[in-house]
Image (cartoon, rainbow, N blue to C red):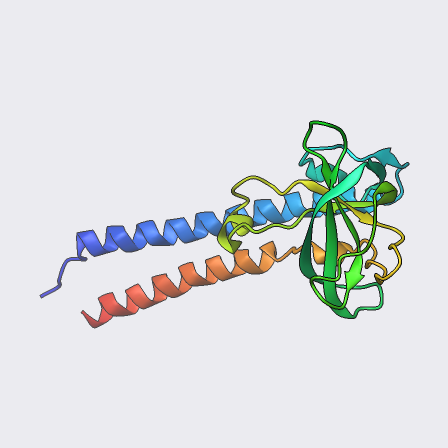
Length: 203
């Protein structure tokens, strides 16, 4: 006697497969968006120097050369990173005041051997390329493009005495693995269909 296909499990599996396919298609759209963004970043490296847009989070300006004036560093922070020679160290980031009020800006002055090796730097004019400031969002938020983007930061061309030079702009530091994610979701959908088909056949 031929048994009927179970309705509820089939609906659940179909919904899961549809969601996986939608996530794969979404990653393909993200791939096209990321490729256009990387092309924009590559072009930014050849654009004229601008003043650092204080307090903005405009990702379209990443990798562009800019200048800013730090009245004084009001605090310091350290983040793991590499210097221009590829050696591991601690990025020394000054949080600068630009006036009596206002958001100020961050400048990564150079790389130190230890996290607390802040330079004796009083401030002044700095130039470099625009990058993101430290981003402490959970990885899932970054992957999904959720949350508030980190503010822009200046990565100095020339470090003050006592620090090693920063690594230059590197487009490869921008992850572009959306195609791999898309293939992964499509494979998950295929595996789910195959497993459920085998289960129905056995039943």
